[in-house]
Length: 525
Image 1 (cartoon, rainbow, N blue to C red):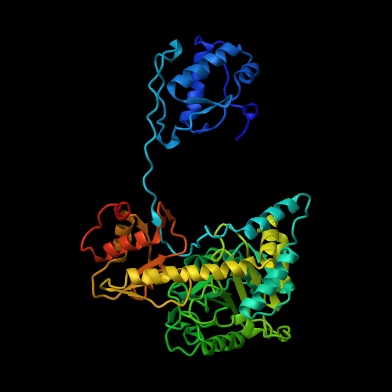
Image 2 (tube, one colour; image 1 turned 180 degrees about the vertical axis):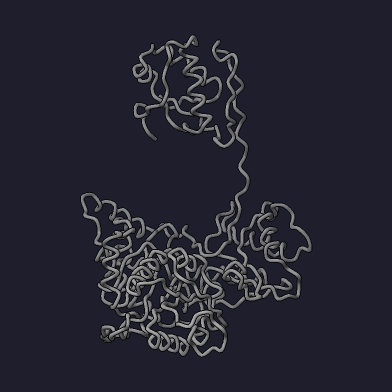
């Protein structure tokens, strides 16, 4: 909290106004509280300091403060005067002018604060549990990074070298990707990395790109190329992810409205989003062959490959494209990408650590590295120097590996809990998932569920989930309906984990023939 002498309030006195000076101060200070300029707990200037600034007697300020004390707007604590902590800004109605303000009469006190409603339990997907992250190692990494920030230079455009070295080591050990730190770019996350890639590739092409995306797929990654003016080509997936034969210029006999292959394909091969398919090795090799034949870039979003519960994760596409000891060759005349350079990998620490971290990475194809570096130099690196230093320290200490192993066990427990809680619900099938932070509950048709109705009734009962249909491209819903339920960050119930209560509510919503009773979460507790 600031000291009272640090506060400089926008109040003044008008000696031409016939109203007494204390009444002028009361009206202005009350309006500052009502309008939200002053909030509960904010300190006010000392009576002596405010009187000196306004050029009035201290007694005028004391009189004004005393009146506001009596009205319930101000509170004295530890020798300081603050806006009363019990005032809830959202509950304070804008005060109408009191006709007797000028006479110093006391107006009606603001209404008391009501108890807050019980918070919604948010089971929308993609949000990790951050409560277990505050370990001594995590705090030490940030403390040391903050201490080292004073006087430190801004990190290079490509990202801090210690962090790129640690990411390269992490990829080697965890994903089988052997790359030089010079091939890595620190980003602010997957979307930032995708924007950078498309800008570089579009600059080389000299025209808007054709970008194939999985359908269904991650909506924000589909919107990035659209926002940048490129053409998006939704490609249907099957139980093994994206099928290269269904790409334009592939083996599929279907009708595409373009006669040229895409310039880039955005895929999630390790854990397709949202349906969870893992692309088998044979299809990965087929996709690489397709990219080499059409001089196309595969953008691999490796967003939560570490969070796998069944078996070992398959190698990243980048590892297959650029194996250990491989030497990338420059592009042949007339081509943009060279051998061993048809895959760019996007990674982020947000799904494993915290969504607000804002640190990720891009494993760049050799042929695009110089253009990417020029772009990043012009645009600057959006990841803060402190965050980059803290992540480098956390990785070097082995903190990420330990945290991932700990959370993998916890998320497996939550996944099993979700499956058990909803196993007997008629008309709902849990799509098998080998990893990740969410589950897909597909409607089988046995019960006439409507996605938006189920989502709305769940929200009315206190649980927020997502509609499966929202992950398909506009006009191509694919005929599959259901809901997507996250189990990463579930909030905290008074007794602890909120997930069991939320799943009980969701089971009642899915078995109730009509609208669910209002906010059943409270009853469940």
